[in-house]
Length: 352
Image 1 (tube, one colour):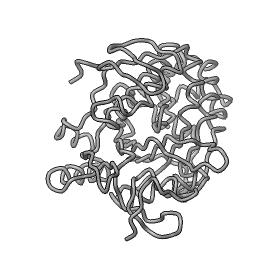
Image 2 (tube, rainbow, N blue to C red):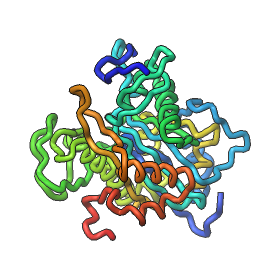
Image 3 (cartoon, rainbow, N blue to C red):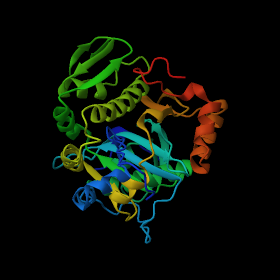
């Protein structure tokens, strides 16, 4: 098998008695529209707005009957959906959102972008070994092709097959934070960022540019990209809380405007199923109950290049059992058995 490095990339519904809005999960690499059956009470206009969000056939697994059946595994990718001419497409964040059979519990598994894997197609139809985010770039300049190659890479390496894909232009979510007037983020320690200066430990309200600098930061964390993953997942939950606090999940007029903002930053593949069908089916999911999971792995330098690897032995056993739990819909039990891999949200200090 050819050995390449990422520095040498190619050019390239169930009814409810009372209207209840659930959440819009949005953020870097973590996007899922989850609106409740209460949307029906506000009429077809809002449902049509939800269905106007762009969908493309990325995985080639269209569902003819349009039913949303659990369990579900959705690939969520934070990427530049409009790369400048001549620049390679990039995926900065990769997450698997697992939803259980009952469509009531969702958990997020982060895949480190530097994870060393075998990529089945490295732009020329040939395999290579590289960082997993390189598979997105090798897929070509179109976001859908990059996502398809990334999904294939994950499936080939870990056996997880996907029911859908959500591609998000993360920097575009600055518009959403601007609409909120800012966002509350909690830092476990002072963070000296490359793009925004030093931010102090604790919970504070941040303007959009500062929030982006915090969430993008990688090198100021003691454990590097793992720290950034935790902050990205925290950012997702805080956006949800902010949307709820400001009435975006209970006011049809406000949520309509938010859908317009979010929709500009999304490309979805829901297997041909209407986005509104997903919205209604997944209304029982609560953002506060979502757990975020670190992949059993560690950093390692190989031939002068920094990778994330899954070491042989106990670590590989834990990683294999994690992917088995995703496939078998036993992830909630796996989390109880492996609490050390949970990413604790810094705003929930006392969460058990």
